Every structure is written in structure tokens, then in C-alpha cells.
Length: 584
Image (cartoon, rainbow, N blue to C red; front, side, top):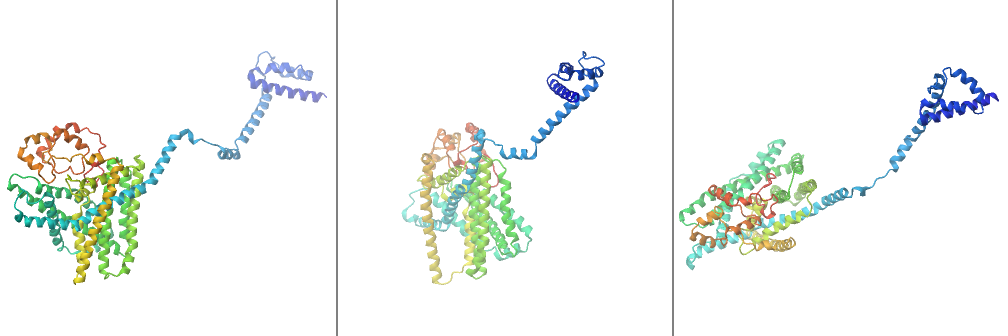
């Protein structure tokens, strides 16, 4: 009984000490021990307490043996708590927490809505981009067919007017209308460059290029692409300078001599650009005829390098419009180059139709890689620059506006020239090369062959007329959807290239103003207040070269236009920035 009472007393004392130390600290442990002595096992604890407390219990600090034993009970309780906490932080409990924890996306609704819209935009890009590409390719096709179909007829009518003019008398100061002068110049340039191309041996060029290594051909092809863009950028300026020099009102007959150097410069440009495109076509032909197709693979991989150079740059809407026009021109040019390659290969195999199916997979592979690169490039450009997919509808409306405005009575440019300025696509060099390749690949002999050629020509005219009608209808629809009809009724810019300011207009004589009003464009002379809004909503044709002497007058009179916002109207983007992404 005594042992049982002593054990029960020790348990009660240990429990009391643990509770007091947890609540009041270790220093107050003596008081609970004295209160515990009056319990059931008091006599035994008193006798043992005299031996364990030689210094008395009034100092508040527990003796060493007592502290050691109670500390042991305290440490055992802490171990118990640690075991319990370790059991709670077990691997199964962690896995359970990872599997059952939750979160709420609606707490950041704006962020996730924006991410979803970006995904939807990327999914819409292929459809919207291809709609723009198809419309632009048919525009290029219309301008390209114009050179083969309507331009010869217009040249014939202009020459007929010129030769029959003495029969009707010289009622007008002009022998020909300015549009007819431009048509004759284009026709003469085509004929001269075609005969000059006969001195270029295509077969020698093919074997010369084929003897080079793959790396050399890859570098040559890249250099040719850059040179083609530079030629396209500068070539239309040369042609427009020729057209304006030949048609601008002149007071002295001696001033017409200036047309001769411009004409020779234009002929040289068209000839060199045609040779450049011929080298491109020859290189592509070598790639098609190589045994291991390594060069063709390298040339296709060059398209994917274009993604790296374009995607990670900052683009505005205007810059994306310029890139889209460049892609349209590049894709149409590649189609013509592939046509030339197929014609040359079919000629070498005696027009065997089985060989066409050998070329067909490679042709499809080149076209598919071009389409894939354009889609990926535009998708990520719009994603990184927060541009919506609806912007391609605006681009399509701007191209349609050019077509509709060129059909107006007061139009001041030909449609083919408008396409050349907008997209950098100049049909004359490409037409010269295609005529050269077709005439050398297809031999016309006999009356039946000539009859087939005439029927083919009428078929081209029918295709051109049908294409023009469909494009004109679609363009009117796109212009109405974009609500751009009011811009069609704005009068075109009337200032001459060298005299756009009001100061230079004041210097002009009345006879010069009468000549301007009777010129090809039939454009009346407006005052300065009419010029400023036209600069904002002008088309892509206000870019004829300005003499250096009048640049100061332009900067002084139009100083209020220097600080216009960088987001210009899409109709003002008329330069060939296909060589780089310039922000005007």
C-alpha cells in the first residue's frame, strides 16, 4: 500500500509540475510541489522532501535532482508532441494535400480572359491571313496579266492615234494623252529588253550554277533575294521618274530631251532585274534537279530563318501592313519562278507528262513551307505586339481602295503602278523573263500552232477581264464594309512633284496652271488649305521625287505636319520597306 501510495503521489507531482511549467514557467515549480504534499501520499513525500530540499523551498528555484526529474518528464512530453507533428507531416499527408488543394481562377479573371483571347487570335490568324494573301495574289495576277493582254492593245491604239493624227488635224497641243505615252514607253521597254535577253544564254548559266558547291549556292540565293528587294525598291522610282518626265507640261521643246536619259536608265533597270530573276529561277532549278535534294532543303530552311529575324521585333500596324504586302509579292513571285522551273524541266524531257508528277511533290513542298512560315510568323507577331486578327480586314480594305480609286474618272495612276508601289511588285522584269522562257521552250510551227497561240491569247484576255470584274466587285464590298467611301470622293493631290508648297505655287505663272489643269490627270490646282487634309488621307501615289532645291520650302510650309502621330493612315504606306521594318 505504501508503494502504491508513493507511486500515485509521484504521478500527481509530475503532472502538476508539467502543467505549471507549461503555464507559468520553470521558476514557479516549487509552489505546486508544496500544495501536492497535502495529498494522499503526503507523509512519504514529506520525509523524502526533507532530504531533497536542504536549502528550503522559499527561493523559487527548484533543486537540481528535482529539476532533472521534472525535466525528464517535460522532455518526454515534447518528444510525444514531436512524434505527433511528424506523423501529421508524413508523406501520405503531403500527397493528400497536393491532391486535394484547390484554387480559384476567377480571382484573376482579366488575366485569363486576355490569355484566352490571344489563343483565339492565333487560331484566327491563318484564316484571316490567307484571305488577305489570296486577295493580294489575285491583285498581282491582275497587274501581271495586264502586261500580256491589255497593254499590247493599248499600245496599238496609241500608235494608231499617233499615225492617224494628221488626218484629223492638230486640235490639241498634245499629240497623245499622257496615259498613252506611258503605255508606249512600257511597250518599247518590253520589246527592247526582250531582244536583249536573247544574248543571255540560259543553258550556260544553268551549268555554271550547277558546278558550284551547295554552300555557295545557298549564299548566292540569299544574296539574290536581298538584291531583288533592293531592285524592286528603286526600280519603281526609276519608272515613275520616266513617266513623269515624259508627261509633265513643258514650256520649251528642249525640255523633252530629258526623257532620253530616263528612258535608257529604265531599260537598263528592267534588263538587270530580269537577269537577276533568271539567276534566281536557275538556282531553284538546280535545287530541283539535285540528286539528294540537299540544296532544296537548305533553301526551304531559309524561310524558317526569316521567323527568327521578324518575330522578336516590335511591330506596329503599319509595319505589319508593309510586311504583309511583301509576303504577298514574295509568294506570287515564287509561283512564277516555280512555273519557269517546270517549263524548263518539261522542255528537257520533251514535254513528257510523267515528269510533271515527279516535280509535283517538290513544288507542293516549297509552297507548303512558304505558307507555314507566313502563318507562324504572323501569328507570333500579332501575339507579341497585341494586334488583333481584324487588322487583316483593314489591310484588305486598303488594297481594295487602291483598285477602286484607280477606276475613277479622275484617277491619276494606272492600277499596275499602284500595285507596284504598294507591294513592291514590278511586273515588267518578270514579264520579260517569262516571255523569254516561253518563246525558247515552246516552238511554234505551222498554221495550227499559230491558231492555238491566238486562242491562248484570247483566253488570257478573258481571264484578265473576269479576274478584274470579280476583284472590282469584291473591292467595292470591302470598301463599303470599312466605310471608306467618303475617301473616294476626295480630290486627288494636285501639286507637281517639284512644287508641292504654296510658295512654289505662287511662283508659277498662269499659263503653267492652265497646263496643269489640262494635263493627263486633269487635276485642278488647289490652295494650301486643301493640301493638308489630303496628306492625311492620300493614296500611295504621292511619292514622285522632289528636287533638292524645294525641300526647304516643303519643310517650312508643312512644319505643322512634322509632329503627326506615328500611326499614319494605311493609305499612306506607299514605300518599299520590304528590306527592313522601318517605322515612319
